Length: 115
Length: 114
Image (cartoon, rainbow over all chains, first blue to last red; front, side, top):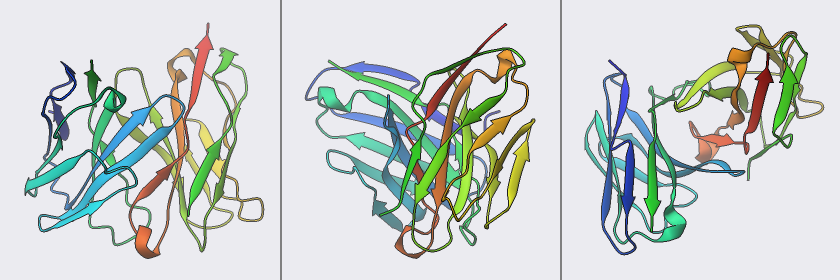
């Protein structure tokens, strides 16, 4: 079984709808991240959480919110989706972050299309 | 702030050709440097990393050397295979308020033909 899972894998929705993307991990990591990937722009950090009680904005958090329901679960919400939020979304996890070399482990991604 | 710049893609090579993907960075202090790879339809996975100047990371025939004097971390492979076709991302992790977060380059698409 995959260590980092994302649901759904694909979603098509309409402008103005509320959407939730879910991420679960079995790696036992404290840190979780949400990124979006756009062609030619690489991955950009939306939100990150260093433990259940710690939520932080990334570089592009406007229009998004998150919830850390448990150590293993981190959800991303789009309260009112708009077309420029069409992208590939990735969840990632890492260990305690005691060093700069901690590897991040990525889920398979959710492809979101907002019409 | 920190930033990573990769060479423009896409890169198209024949099997057994030599590969170089350039990566340069801007950061204060002493960041750690990474190459991640994304195979079609999958999430990113770590390919290799280096933590200090002159360190060489290597994995699966790929190598990259941390060059602080040129702020570079170029990815190389002596003989590519069709199975190396993927998107390659250079990234860095730094200290201070950015501790533990990755800053990514824009990614380079590599296609290898038989």
